[in-house]
Amino acid sequence: MTLEELERLRAEPSTSKDIVQALLPVETALDDIPALAVDRAEAARLLNGQPVLLRGRDAPMHRGPVSVTTDGALIALGEIDRGELHPRRIFHLDRP
Image (cartoon, rainbow, N blue to C red; front, side, top):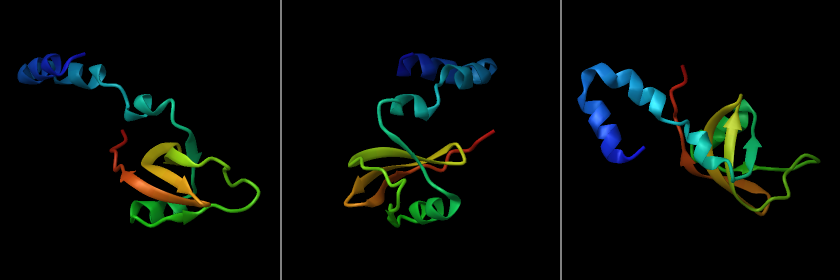
């Protein structure tokens, strides 16, 4: 769907539900980026712009960009560098 089509839908008051149905979740665009799940304490650090140290047996060996989730919800795009996860973009997505 083009931006023009979305603007047209937005201009018509009777189609506000159509706009919501036409949009895909942001996670759809992140399918090709590795995902990393963090716990709530780590998520709180990331949401405050602080890095998280990744250590232990389950620490990812990946280096580079990742999408970060907690409790199944996307919270950030980050980058892993030298065993630390640094937040690059934070998301405060409203969930239904």
